[in-house]
Image (tube, rainbow, N blue to C red):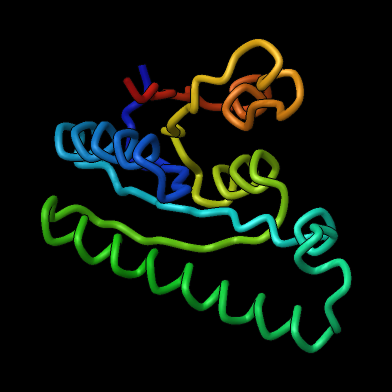
Length: 152
């Protein structure tokens, strides 16, 4: 088995992703692997087409998206600093924009991730059919192992 040196951790700031981060931290400490935390904002057409923005002027939407992205970057930086302090591992964090599964896979290639760690929301049935599953899409297309952590 290949030595794990680089672990990509998908973060959506939910309790599920924090649980996944804890699992990645344990792996990282055990294997002295670097952690690459990413959050995908998904602020594209679907986000802007929501009822909140549909009838808003362009300046309002642009201002909101700038503030939203700035807030996400602050949350990520705070999480990276806290995790570095607790684990003493090499850690970096990024906030990306796009479709979550696509950006997770793209970033995994970019950082040469040996593993992807992510939480699952555990949707099934109609919820899963309607919303799809980012974790499932990543599992199907990833070129490295994917550890999914279910929140219970």
